[in-house]
Amino acid sequence: MVDSPYPPVQAYLNSHFIEEREGRPLRILSEYLEPDARFEKHNVEDTIVFLGSARLLPKDVAEAKLQEARKDNGDVRRAEIDLEMSRYYEDARCLARRLTEWSKNLEGHEKRFVMCTGGGPGIMEAGNRGASEAKGLNMGFNITLPFEQSQNPYITRQLSFEFRYFFMRKFWFMYLAKAIVTFPGGFGTMDEFFESLTLIQTGKVSKKLPMVLFGKDFWNEVMNLDAMVKYGTISPEDLDLFIFTDSVDEAYTYITTELEKHALTEMARSQATAP
Image (cartoon, rainbow, N blue to C red; front, side):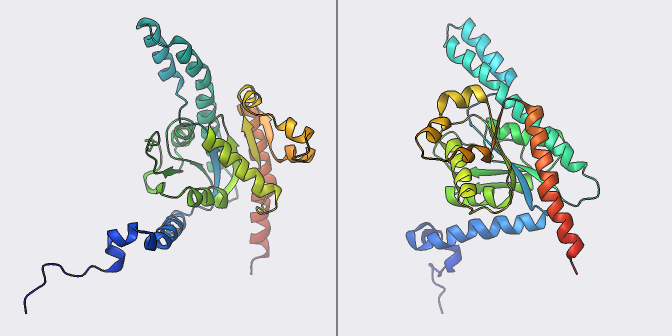
């Protein structure tokens, strides 16, 4: 018998099949099963999610770009705005570090809150960076895009993910989240923020989920939620689904207080009633 020069390939190894329409259910299922297995392996059950623009810069980088623009007759105004917006990068970095330190120092609890971001640059990098500086595990849910998105270097290696589908990525954001902080961002940030609000408003998320909208100057200029109340498209109480702040201290206090009141209390209650 002569061996065939073209031996058959097992279906799950057939990359052509996997990439075609017929393989879509397997691709989707893999983005549920593979992350789930890793979460179980590393005992990850609860996250604090950081949302925000991929385009914001660290302060030192923004300062250097402004000096370069002034020296080379570049776009000084753009560089000045980038420097102004860099405060949100530094605030996200600080908040992630403080929340990680708080989580690591919880006494009498096995609960651990892992900082989780979209895995890219900007605010996402800041969240992972702050957690890394506190020597804590942190996660990045990257998404394959034709531009802009690249993995930042601060994500815990074993908890770095690459998603093909936005809806699977957002599923994991919401499923594990025990708190969400939304910093200034673009279409993607607003999509994630409003989807989170919609799920809470409609009762599809039953857990208590503290939400922070960070950056009053930015958000007051780019959207007007009070107008939605005025025209009756949302209820006044819908604005109570989140807090609005410019303060790292206020965001930190609100999140930790809410988690201690709800997530940690619920865990203690379930442990007390366990057989």
